Length: 171
Image 1: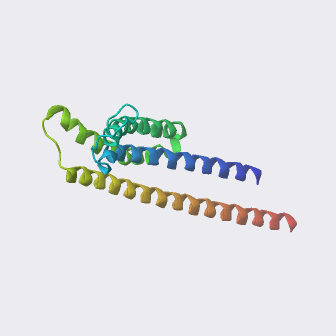
Image 2: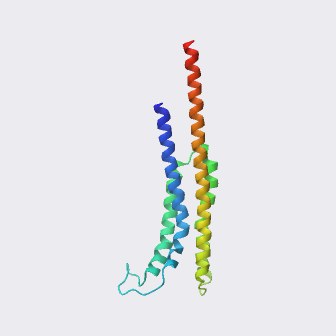
Image 3: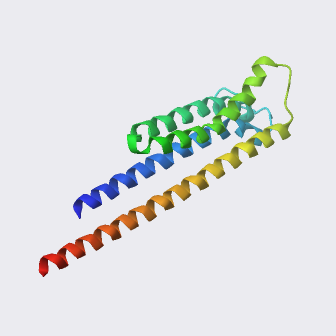
């Protein structure tokens, strides 16, 4: 029974790390677009050295995006094992779509510096990334339900097996 509890606690810990890592990766794709929520109005006093909150969020969002992506990957990498590697390959591939779309959007400015995208472009990309993130979180929740059902089934199977063994021993 203690072994089963230890395995359950270990699985829960992995599940928490997996969820946290994926959420950080999803957020990393949205952070570069957070600055469009604020207008570029000059402040009377500087905000962390920036003349407006909009400019601060633009700079912080792009750099925090990389930070969150790396943190998410650093959380996910240690919990990889041989028996679940295929799931993680698929999961990581889809969770990295959000930062990828964000990076492509911002890399376009490197090669086409004169283009200033309309605010609708920011909202559209932000909505796309949010939709991808929501879809992936829903898939992750389905996976969590599947794991719970699997554990319940294994627990019942183990209990039935032990009950059968106990009944045979008592005969």
